[in-house]
Image (cartoon, rainbow, N blue to C red; front, side):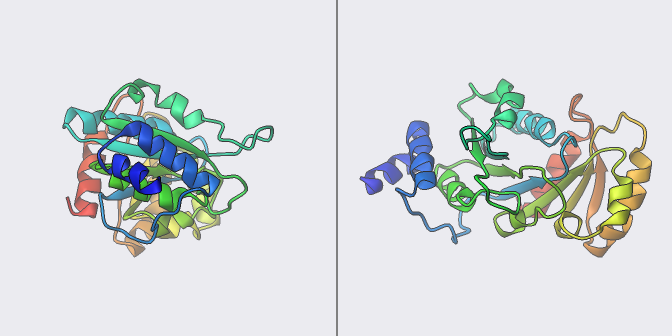
Length: 234
């Protein structure tokens, strides 16, 4: 039965993909999560309130304008009542949920540390099997310890907002040290230049760029996509 399910996933059957991911989370399906063959995976991480989901939604809109398909795995905090995902990211990306070229899956951490879910790597493998052009995984947004994303992503994008400069100076470890691209989002608000200065040392150490975006207007998102494509070798 699993072979038939995976065959339908590979044929682009979105319902089969959803069923396969559900079975994977429940332990009824096993996939080789160690394989990195398939479309590029972009990890998006950063502190709560930085606008990660809004920026991803803007990026997805641009990808679709270019005719490219994309699957997003949004890791949400677990509900204290049901243990399931709170689905905040899916709500913020609602403009794309009816688009056949976009697949969005929210997944609860279920107590897993590191910013992802224990089923995240396998889910990305299933999404890659489905033939999407690009995969995006958004971490839960809980703080500096979210470094697990580097194990599943080809490129890690760190998104911060104005006012985050003090945190960069206080703790340069964790997610600041694994990013391949630094984004200061909400670029229309005061404090952007201070954050850019705070990030300079970390960016220089990784030979990474710092970009400024305003996800709500789309400003800077074109350049973000160009840099992502360059980093993943498209």
